Each structure stands twice: as C-alpha cells, then as structure tokens.
Image 1 (cartoon, rainbow, N blue to C red):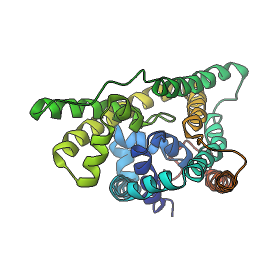
Image 2: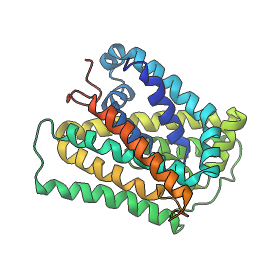
Image 3: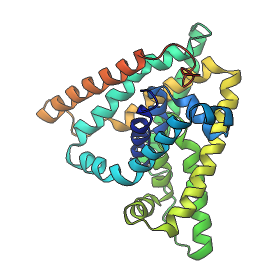
Image 4: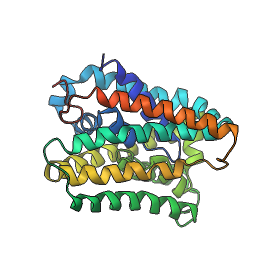
Length: 281
C-alpha cells in the first residue's frame, strides 16, 4: 500500500516544484520518503532495486504534477488563495512531529540543537524577505540559441540543487532569476526547446543536492534534522496568505489547515520509527 502512495507523494512533489513558495523537499520529509528519494537520486542502485515500484510511481506522479495538476493548483491559488495556502500550511505543521521523531531515533535532543533549528528557520525567512525586497531580481533571459539553452540549464541546475532541500522553494529560484514565466509557459505549451535543457539542468542539480544531503546526514543526523525542522517551519512564512483576518475565507482556510494537519499527522503516525524511507527495507 505504501508503494501505491508513491504516485500521490510524487504528484504533490511535482506540484510543489512549480508553485513559488512551496518546497518539494518539505513534503518528502512529511511523507516519510525523504531519505529514499535522496538515495535514489544519488544513484544508490541497491535502494533503486528494492524500492523500484515506489520510485516508478513517484516519478510518474511527479511528472503528472508538473504537467497536469499545475493548472488546477494554480487556479486554486488564484481563486481561493487563503484556503489553499492554509491547507499547505497545515500539511507542513502536521508533519513536524514526524521530523522530530526521525531526528531523535538514535540520539536525544538537548538545548544545543536549538541553534541549528533557529539557523534553518532564519535561512528560509531571510531568503523570503530578500526576495520580497527584490534583492535577487536578476532580470529575464535575453539570449538565443545555444547560449540560451546553456543559461536555461544553468538556472535549472541551481533550482534543482535546492529542490531537494526542505523549506526552500525551487520555483522561488526561477522567480529570482526572472525565468519562472518562461519555464511555466514551456510546461503548459510543451516547448521542448526550453524543457529539454531545463530537465537536464534540474536532474543534475537534484543528483548533486541529494549526494550532498546524504553526505552530511551520515555524520550529523540530529543537528541536520533539527535544521531541517527549522527550515520546514520557516517555509510556512511565505505561505501566510494576504487578506487573512476575521472573515469567512479565513475561517474556511483554518478548517482546511486543521484537516490537512490531521492528514499529515496521521500519515506520520504510521511510520515505524526507522530511518525515513527505510521502513520496508
């Protein structure tokens, strides 16, 4: 059954990749498959063979989320921004207990680990505030031909590098570089002149990011997960909807948040306490 859920997890991850402010890595942690996806992306063939069916469904779901579901979720974000953002906020907050449980499997928390939590929180919030201030506005791509393809691949590589990190939105990087509209338009129109170099860059970035994460996790699991918890918590700040207040949309949004938090918490309870993604190995 958990393998079949790979399609759902992949679809949510795919949608998160194209919605600025949402972090795909955050949802991987919440769904309990973060390590599995990182190990597969780092080309650990033992994991790939063992979880092949799950990974296949995850990949299909992610592709479907990128191409098929993005228009639906974009419509929801524009039509019901408060409810949609609070729904995602609930998913994130409801997944925090799972992150803390994974972090403390082998070592108990002590006050010193509050520092990486604060660092992760500050990093995500600082990036959000800097983006709001326009500090990362690098302008749109104006190249053509091979130069354009190389620049697209480079931007996509940087976006892919952070797409695996919890709390940081890969789409935010594309917004910062001024190429988000071009990438989103290419997805809708299936413009392969943009999609092919973008896919190559994102794939290379994901592999590099996954290898880096696994290397650090092996040596510093608890502090890294504490930092991840801070980054995940910080990712709720960009999602806080404008216009929220004492009104019916906010009330509906709070109900959506409560529902999604319960869903994420229930899914987290099903984890057995083994390392994330290793429950069936």
